Length: 129
Image (tube, rainbow, N blue to C red; front, side, top):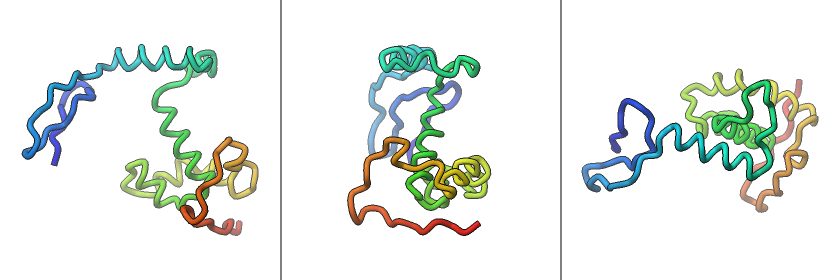
């Protein structure tokens, strides 16, 4: 089992009993913020949502969850992917997305998601209600 650094966040490589610690440079919060801001400017997204302080790195997590739900991935699988111990948490946080998908108001196609490879995704019928 890897042992992760404690205290302030760091992206340093974990160590295990079988693999000694590697001298990987840690990525500090300020460095990550600078890289994120540069990426937003380069992608011409830095101006979006100023009322919320712009796009945040954590927003990628919500985007990923929304894409999975739009693809009709079962909620229990979405919960597992996000690391939620209880899928009810996922259902509560993303209920608004799930309703839009069920009503056909939000589709994977509208989100610009490519078609899945045939046989790689099991399509589920829309839920009644």
